[in-house]
Image 1 (cartoon, rainbow, N blue to C red):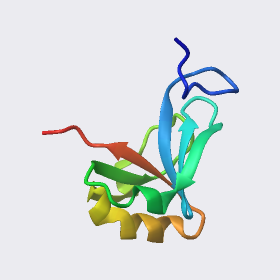
Image 2: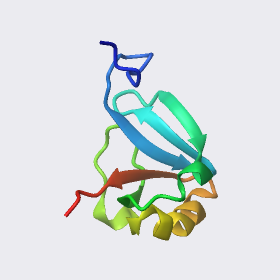
Image 3: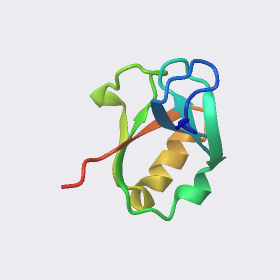
Amino acid sequence: MTNMLACPSCGLDKTESIVHRGSYILRCAACGETIVATSFMAMLDSDHQCSAFIDPGPGKHLLPETLVARGSLRQIATAISAAASDGTLIRLIPEAKG
């Protein structure tokens, strides 16, 4: 079966969730190619727990000091939007369910 989220450029099926201005983007973790995008507003009504960091680039490790917010997406959406409003890329990392 073909993975629908495989990168059209390099074929890797590992993605990263990014917020850029008002967009929510799934991009390839290897080459940075955008795979799919939607409005960040479409994601705001979620209770999924995540951490939001300033993005260092595709596939690069996040630095603890670049943490923007942590909590349910519904609770931290304002902080994410504020950080992404100037064009800064924000990477969302899902938190393990505890």
